[in-house]
Image (tube, rainbow, N blue to C red; front, side, top):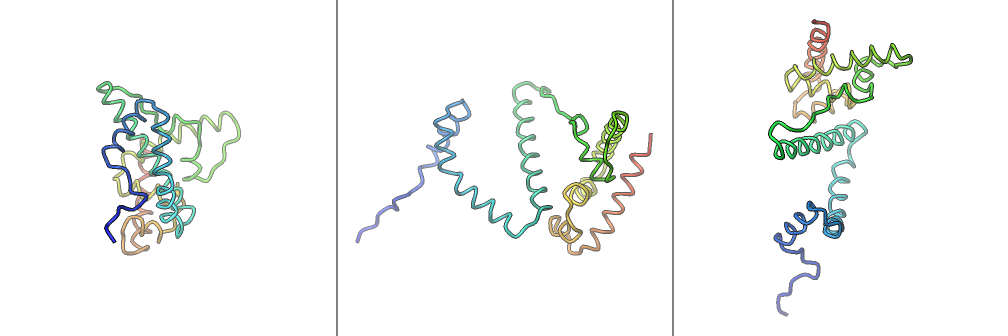
Length: 181
C-alpha cells in the first residue's frame, strides 16, 4: 500500500485566510463555508469546556466571550479613527443586574429606578477603580454566582478560604468607594 492523504484533509491555511478576508468583506458564501467547516469543532470544544461546569461557570464563560467581542469591536473602531468609537458604560444599559447582583434589590417605581441607575453607575465606577484581582472576585461571586471554591479554581488560587477572605476585603473596599463622594 502506498501512503494516501485522508479523505477529509483540511484545506490549506492560505485558503482559510482567503475565506476569512472574503467573509469580512461581506461575502456570505465565504462566511457560510467557514461556519460549515469550523462550527462542528467549535461546538465540541465548547461542550468539553462546559460539560463538567455549572451555571456560574457558564455565566462567566459567556461574559468573557462578550468581553472579547467588545474589545475586538473597540479595537476595530480605534483602528478606523484614532480615539473613535463610543464605549457604553454598563450603567448606561437598561439593566439593574449589577446592583441586583450586589444588593439583591428589585426596582419597582420610576424614582426607585432612577436611584438604582445612579447606584449602578457608582458601583461601576467603584469596581473599575479597584484592583483587577478584587474586581474579578466581585464579578465571579456576585455577578456570576460562583462558590468560593469555584472562584478559587477559576483564579488558580489554592484555597477557597483565601478567596473568601479576599472577597470580603474586596466588598469592604467596594463599599468604601461607593460611599465616598
